[in-house]
Structures are given as structure tokens and as C-alpha cells.
Image 1: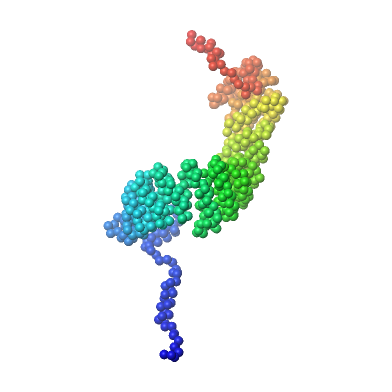
Image 2: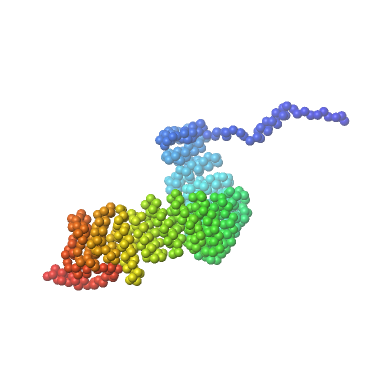
Length: 640
């Protein structure tokens, strides 16, 4: 026994067993085992290989007929019901009617087997809506499953509750859902809050007594539960912020903890801590800080930190920066914070990416609403976006330029807008641009002459979309003047000269022709030309312009005004007379009546014509006697 022991050699059998155990413990390789029938995989494969919709519809019709026959059979294999329900969902997802199998989905929710129950709830949620007649059949099952010991069953039931419970059935499950707010599993608590949130959306009065529960769940130890409570509180705050003002410190504290990376790393996205929770909190703070200096002051510090940490050139970081800017623009303004926002957003506007440019323009729009000075330094970068081929970007740029315009930059911005109008082809965009040019020119015009020149250019380029009100505003401005006779006369003479030059162009829009005819008719004498020359010029334009036929009535009135003015002697020129005689037989009743009236007026004495068509009297108030004494003779004669 005291001798040396012989060395032990490994037994081949033992080595084989060890190798077998090692192989058994190794991770499986190759494709996962198939759990569905060959028919199921064939359907999926055939659908994927379809070249057009008609082939897909043919396959689905065959599948519907097959499943209808199988489900109607008295010898239905219960073990395959899960697969049949999945195939029915496939049919519904592709736009076909699987209503013949709805009842089988409802029956599957009553099963005791976990997998079958979950598939049953999934199929029921996909097939039915809250107003379907079969909902009544699952209410009792939901009540039982909400009390189940298996949290997976409870989660499946809560998911179905969110999807299918309507206003009438909420009271049947509300007590059980409220009890689940204290469940030991965080998944259940989260889904319970989501269900209560859904109840609030369907019937706000049903969960009024549970609003305090949402506040309590903000303190839950699990971040997912807290984030679900944030979604519900956000909706409550949007409806009425006042009762939730005292939560501002809590929201600020939560946001600060997230920004400081105190949440588990599983909530990070591209190394950004819980970005979606951050965005939700920023939206909540934006709603709570509106016109509230005290609440906003508590937010400034954390917003600055959030803005700084989010500016990391990653897409999700850009989203946080954008939401920070919107929040800073919504709450009581802080000049320092807004300055910081403007500097960060400038990176977006100058980015080569159109998506970031659009976000930058939208963010600048929010800041400009507070104070346009924050966007002044980015004005040229914004203007450059007008030439971008992206239509949505151009529209957003127009909107921002409109908001940025002030008296000191109106000339630059309106010039850029006019250049953009030349290249714009979309009618809606042209209408919007014309409207904004007109409004900005009228509001911030540095001089009357600039206003007239701008409006003339706009009429010439976008006359097809100019509204009549813009033309009336221009004519009113020329007619009213500034009150200084010498300056007004010079302005009107300049306008007449410019309009007479425009008549030489081959194609003028109707709205511009109407303005030209009115201005020349009222103030043509200031040009130094004789009334006959002016009448011939107007009549020639009516004959040559494509839109001339539409303004013949205005042309005859303008000629009559010129004839009634100085040097006209109450006589029409030869061309004007021909125009009037030609329209005596016009198909337009209005034009024909105008021709007869002017013809009758021209046969009167020059003094009568001048009294009927006074010069520069368009803006004078007319005194109307309500008694209408001039009609007494006609009334007495009619009553006699």
C-alpha cells in the first residue's frame, strides 16, 4: 500500500461522455426548428414571391377558402388552432376579410394554456375594434385574467384592454386595473398605467378620481413605469396645466437625473441617456411654463444643461436640441437661454442635410416669434434656402422670412421673395408668396415709390394668382397719397409713366391691366401727353393684350375719364369711339350697358361730362341724403 500508485489513464467511455456533455452545452447552430406546418411556410414563401397584387389576392382567396373549410369542420385539431389564428391574422393584414374566424380568436382567449391564450388575445386585438359585437364575450375573461397569478397572462389582458375596452365596458375592468398599479412586476405596473391613460382618452370622467395615482407613479423605482406615467400626465397637463404646476420641481429633478446619466444604461440610445423620456419631459415643461415666470425660472438651468449635452451631432441629440429650443420659446423667455438656442440652431441651418436645415428653420421660427433679433445674424443663410430644390424646405424658408421681416430688412427679403416667385411653378406656393409680398410691402414699405414698384413687379410676375384686394390697396394708396400735393403729383406722374411703358409688353395679367387703366384714366394728364394719345394707347393695349377682352369695360371708363379731363373737351378719340361702338353689341350685359351709358354721356355738354366724371375724386366721401329728394318728382308722377 505504501508503493507508488500507477498513473490513471482516461477511459475512452468517460471521454465520450464528456464530449457529449460539451456538445450538449454548446449553443445550437443552423436554422431554428420549425414549429409551424409546411402549409404555413409555403404561404409565406408564395406571398413573398408574388410579382403583383392580383397574384397575392389569388393566393389569399385560396387560403381563405381552405381555412374556412378547416374551421367549420367538426374534427378541428385543437393543437393546430394557434397556427390557424396566425394565418387568419396574415389574411387580415393583407386586406382580406377573415371575419369567419373571429369567434375562434375569442374562444382562444378562454383557454388555460399560456401560448394559446396570448395568441388568442393578439388575434382578438387585431380583428376587433371597441364597438364590435363580440367584445361582450371577452369582458368576463379579461376580469379573470387581470387577477391571474401569471404576470404574462395579466400583461396580455392589459394589452387587450388598451385596444378593445370602450366607454361602456370601462367600469367592468377599472377596479382590477387600478389594483395592478401595486403589482410586484414592473411590466404589469407600466401596462396598468397605459390602460388607465387609454381610459382617460376614451372617457375622461371615468378616471378623474385616479389622477393622483399618475402623480404617485412618477416616484416608481422602475424608469419604464415612470415614463408611462409621464405620457398620461402630459395629456392631463395639455388639457389643464394649472392643477399640475406644483409638479414642476419633480419634472425638473427627473430630467436632471436623466441628463446626469443616473438611469440604467439599457435606456441609452446612441449613448444619449433616455432621449425619448427627455423629449416627453421637455414637452411637459413647455406646457407648464407658458406665461409663468416663477415656473420657468426653475427650468432655465436644466434646459441649458440639456441643450449642451444634446448638441452632439447625433440625430437623437438633434431631436433633443430641437425640443429644447421649442420649450425655451414656449416658456417665459430668458434672453441668455434664447441666445444659446439661436447659436446651437445655426449649425442646423448651415448643415448640408436638408432634414437638419428644415429642423433649423422650424426652430428659428419659434425663436423669431419671441424676438426677431435672434435670427438676424442667420438671415442670409436662411435666404439661401430659397434656392434649394427641396419644395418643403423652400416653403418653410418663406414662412421664416415672413416672420423675420422688419422695416430695416424688408427690401432685401421682398427682393428675394420676388426672385423666388419668378421660378415657382406650384400655384399654391405662388399664391402664398404673392400674398406675403403684398402684406410685407404694405406693412413695412420705406417709401411709397418703393411700394408701387414692388407691387408692379409682383403683378407682372404673379398676376395670375394676385387677389383683387391687393390691386385695390395699390389703387387706394395712389389715390390717397401722402397729403403733400407736390409729392403726390410727382408720385402719380411717375406711376403713369411707368404704366404707359408697361403697356408695350406683350403679355400683362388682367389684374395689372386693371390697375394701369384706372391710374392712367385718373392721372393720365400728369404724363404730359394729350388725352387722345392716352386713349389710343389704352385702346391699343385692349386690342393687343391677351387679357384685353376681359377689361374692355374698364378701358371705356378710363377713356371717358380722360375725355372729361383737362384738354379732353368731352370727346372720345377715334380709337376710343370705335371701342365703344363695338361694345354696343357685346354679349356681356355689363360691357354693353357701360358702352350705352358712356355714349349717352359723351353727347352731353363738356361741363356735364366733367361733373359726372370728376378728376382725382376717387377717395372723396360721397354725401348721401337718405330722403332721396331727387326722386320726389318721379314718385309723385307714379302716384298720380
